[in-house]
Every structure is written in C-alpha cells, then in structure tokens.
Image (cartoon, rainbow, N blue to C red):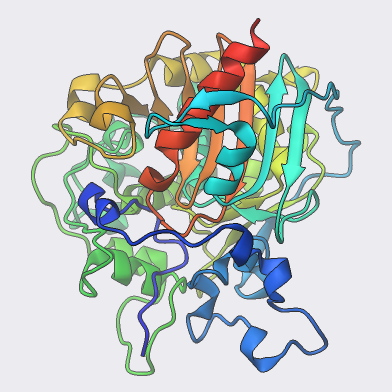
Length: 434
C-alpha cells in the first residue's frame, strides 16, 4: 500500500531531503480542473478523491483537496457574523511582467513565480488597496483553502491577546493551566517557551520514519487514515499527554507542531471556550470578513491548532492588513497595538539561530520567532505567517504591503517555494514603492 503524508502534519522536510527531490511536475499539467478530479455525477472512478485511502494527500490530487477539505473531514466553523463585509478598495496594477532575479540567478517574472510555486490564489495589497488578485485551478474567492501552519499564528496571536488582557501569565508553567500534562514534556515548560517554540520535547517530524511522533499526532487527530488495528491516542489531548521531555526548555528554537497544539489547549482552558468561538469573537467578526473560516476537528470535536484552519484568501488578506496596521482595521482596534508591536520586535535571535532552520534565508540567520510568527529583523521589518505547500501571509510594513498566498506545491517544505517567492515579493515591494 502506498504511504502518504498526514494531511496536516505541519512541518517542513529537512533541507537535504528537498535537495535530493526529483524534478517537479509541470504546474499546468497538474491543474485539478483540467484533470477532472471530483467532477461529474458521480465522478469517474479514477477521478474520485477520498480520505480513507490517502488519495486526498497525494499529488496532484491535493491541488483539489486544499480547497475542499470540509468535504472530506469533520470541521467546525469560525462564524464571520451577520454584519456587512469590510470594504477592500481596488486599484489594479499589472504585475505579471514584473521582472526580478530568481534564487538560481536567472531572470523571472511575477507570473513565472506564480506558476512555478503552484499558486492557487494570491492577493497583493498596497496601502490598504487590492492591487492584484488572481485564482487558479480549484481555488475561488468564496472557497476556504487549507492554511496549514498559518493556523499557528492565529493561535499564538490569541494567546498573546490573553496575556495582554491579564488572563494568561506567560511566565507561569503550562501545567498551571493544564494540570493534565504535568507529567509530560510540557509540565515544567512556561507558557512563553511554548509560544516561542523553545520547549524541549521529544517530537520528531521526520516523515520518512513511520514511528516518528508526527505520525502519532496525525493519527490521534484523525488527520491521517489509521488501520483497523490502531490502538494509539484517539484525540489531541490524549496524544499531548504522551510526549516526553528531551533537552532543556528555553535554550533553543525548535519548530514542533505539538507546541502549537498544546498552546491551543492552554488558550481553550483560559478562555473557557473553543478556539473557533474565541477567534470569531475576538477577530473574525470584527474584521468584517466575507466568509466563515473553519478548523478540522478530532474525534471529540477539538480543533487542530497546529494547522487545521481553512479560510478564504480575501479574509486572510484582511487579517494581514490588520496586522500591518498595528491591530486596527474596519474602524476599530481589533488586536491591542502592544500585542502586534511585541510580535514585530521578535524573539531571541540567538536561540533561533541554533536551530539552523532551513525554511528561512541564511538558515535562520537574523530571524526569530515570537508568539508563533516569523520575524525577519530585516530593514523592511517583514514578519509573516506561513504554512507548508506555500501558504503565506507576508507583511512588509516599510513598503506598506501585504501579500496573501495559497498554493499547492508538491513539496511540503517551504524550501520548495520561499527562496523564489521572497525574491518576487521584494521585487513587488520595490516596484510599488517607487
């Protein structure tokens, strides 16, 4: 039986694994609409995509799946409210022919980048106006698309808001709020260490190892098919309690999805409500979003805080613009300005550099991670939220730019797209700033 990756095991492959990857398929030849996936009443047998057999996460089928998750998996909505959607002013700019030097030293254009990174949708905002918006393949303005680890940045932001409100003590032990994990790796970790991913926890995200904890996580959360003989944890809570300590907390950055899942549990416990309800109340309804977002849930209805959120591109762009504006949007202060400023200042750069994290330029040199946001510390003050296969909320305060991008890249690791997209984004910033 062919092995497949769990749908929402949210980490990048090792740099070496990507370097040895085979040549990528032609993006145009894998267009899900042209290939006829899930079309017809019923679809042809060889065009059906299912969760149970793992076909939902094989390439090129996943180019359809990412815009149709809730047709395959149980979910819970993040209500967008009954108000009028906030206005997104339009000021179209033709970026397709914008030229730049790509990561291989060759000339490329914006349109080339979109194709080469298997883009499903992209919005560029400049000074609060939508200057570019396009959709490809199975994506559409009204369809929620998998955001993968962009989810983490929402969870981190809600935790930071609870800290600002005085409801969550970042210096307290995680076990103060969730005593159920006192004997696990998280028992003697602080909330701040959890928020900044400096927890020493034995958790491998090596996809090649079927015994790695990332597979246990996916099976427990119902995000990967399980055999009939499976007798492991059957929800996120049970899984988190099994994790053991490895190394010391607070010494180095270590990107592990289990940390975001644990933080989501803390947020639920402190807020006294599901994260989907808290997000609707604190952020989603106030942004003036057009559509509900949604989370995948496990067997007991618990949201995947590590990477289970789907949302529309326009609403993700609204969210990014709110962050660019210091938490203010739709005529109100949605996120306290101090929270956004703290994220933008970043975390411990020395701790981050120890990880030699491959998905950022220079393998982490200059970067840091704060409240589950990536902070560049470059001269534009860029900070962003990102997810595997090319999901991105890219915020450039100096250039007054927000770029929201959905993709279905065949390589899960962001090494497959960030070296190219970051150069394209910088070219757009330079062009629009003239």
